[in-house]
Amino acid sequence: CQLFSEPGAGSDLAALATRAVRDDAGDWIVDGQKVWTSSAHTARWAILIARTDPDAPKHRGITYFVCDMTDPGVEVRPLRQITGEAEFNEVFLTGVRIPDVHRLGDVGDGWRVAQTTLMNERVSIGGSRIPREGGMIGKVATTWRERPELRTHDLHRRLLDHWVDAEVARLAGERLRQQLVAGRPGPEGSAMKLAFARLNQAISGLEVELLGDEGLLYGEWEMRRPELVDFTGRDAGYRYLRSKGNSIEGGTSEVLLNIVAERVLGLPPEPRNDKDVAWKDLAR
Image 1 (cartoon, one colour):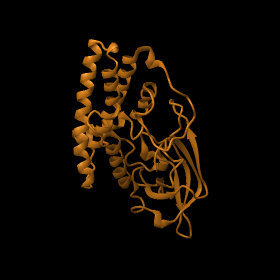
Image 2 (cartoon, one colour; image 1 turned 90 degrees about the horizontal axis):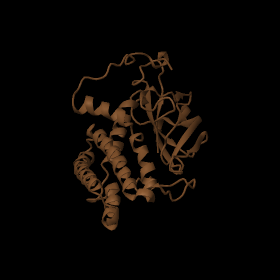
Image 3 (cartoon, one colour; image 1 turned 90 degrees about the vertical axis):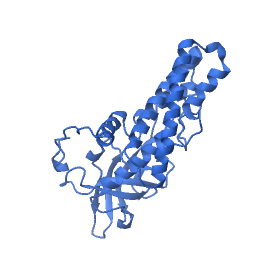
Image 4 (cartoon, one colour; image 1 turned 120 degrees about the horizontal axis):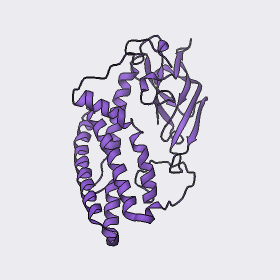
């Protein structure tokens, strides 16, 4: 699992406050809280970023570790979602000892390593390998074919628009995965993940509308802790609710728009007044 986001450091991940302090034995003692951690309840290992130098600016005082989730001091609590399930978790770290051999990269260079992780994550979310008419568009297309009595001209036009957009996104994902295999995940993955969220929300909304009164039904509200994240499982109501999280997980759509603007289109970056300020001096 991925111990990155925190209650006070989500969209501004570099503001994270989880501390890692080196002791006399050379190990790192970690204290803090992480949130929105997918599958933390099933993971044996976690990748973790923590603040190791509060006197450095926020992007430069971070170090990247591998954490054993079975170690003393690691507590996982479920976060029940709008779907009724709890695939997300919050994780509390209290005096967790991480040996220095589990540090990945140089001390203070964790932000650079984390950026590689995030670019890979966004390609894996937005550019996952699916067959033609797979994923969310396949669900609504099947309903369209099997339920001709539900069809209207307006719904037909919108379904065609979404089908074309989904196919374009699928083919773009093929190209991005080739870059990934070559070890060159780029900022284009942010655009793919952004498109993934928008498409899933639009398509699932269309499916609920197509089903009419049936679209308001919801199969079950049982509290479960699934082992796998399933974006398209269960019924139309589940897909509609689950897709709401797509624009938050793996980087919010607003943050991804900034990344696309600055790193793909080359537009001027937003003013950042805290860029050279020590983390400990930032207002919180």
